[in-house]
Amino acid sequence: MLKLRSKVVHVGIDPGVNVGFALSWAGELLQLQTLDFWSAIDELRLLAEGAQLHVYIENPNVNKPTFFKKGANSVAVRENISQKVGSNKRDAQLLIQFVERLGVKVLAMPPRKAGKITAAGFKQLTGWAQSSSQHARDAAMLVLGR
View 1 (tube, one colour):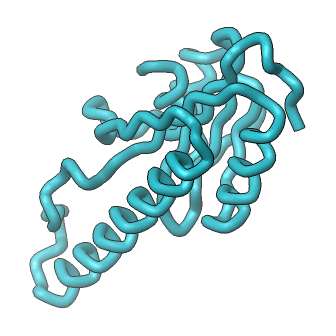
View 2 (cartoon, rainbow, N blue to C red; view 1 turned 135 degrees about the vertical axis):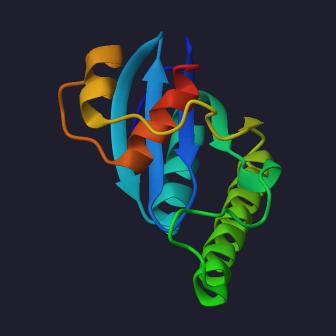
């Protein structure tokens, strides 16, 4: 657990079945991981006890309900996409409400307009040499303001 009360720890969260979780302190990326929903809740609770936090959560609620992808021509495929998007939106709402209940500053952020970033692009942009999932990179982009 971090004991960094003198500065704000920034937490980026990309909600979903696999939750991207990133920590930044004093402009430096400290940690990237991919967690399940309940592990993310546990991590937030522990961090809130030991550090001053600002939490940035990707808020998919600003998006349209169904995304049309190339090859997603059938009703079944579009309904499956809609179900996943709905689940993701609810996860984001629950995470936002949990952070607010902790008394921690939370910023609900729109999804990144520039799209996904590759591991190689992320390394070049941030200097992060360790492996990272797409979810963790998305969370990191929230705390890094990019």
